[in-house]
Length: 79
Image 1: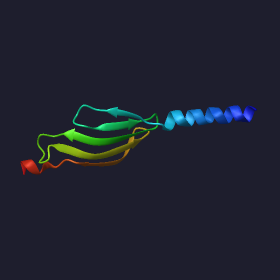
Image 2 (image 1 turned 180 degrees about the vertical axis):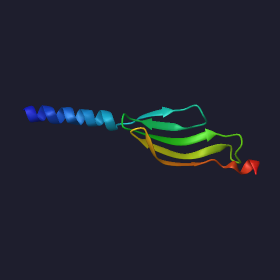
Image 3 (image 1 turned 90 degrees about the horizontal axis):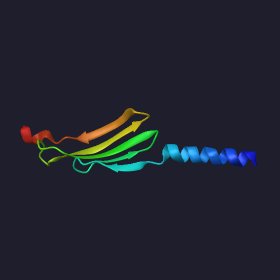
Image 4 (image 1 turned 60 degrees about the vertical axis):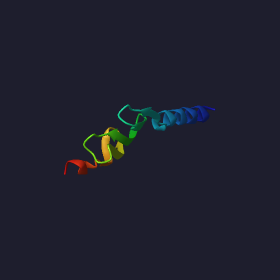
């Protein structure tokens, strides 16, 4: 009985730490998926200096440390 309670508590804590909550930003279409342990951002930002008008890409952070970033800024318009 006691093992079952401990396992249930561990599962609830893991779900709280790992299930992301989507957040839609008002910068042109960026969506952030945040949990307590990580954040994934699908970037789609307005950029008036770009050829396409947007910056596109993805940013991944774990425990507040950026581990991956690939955002295309399309700065060809000014060249």
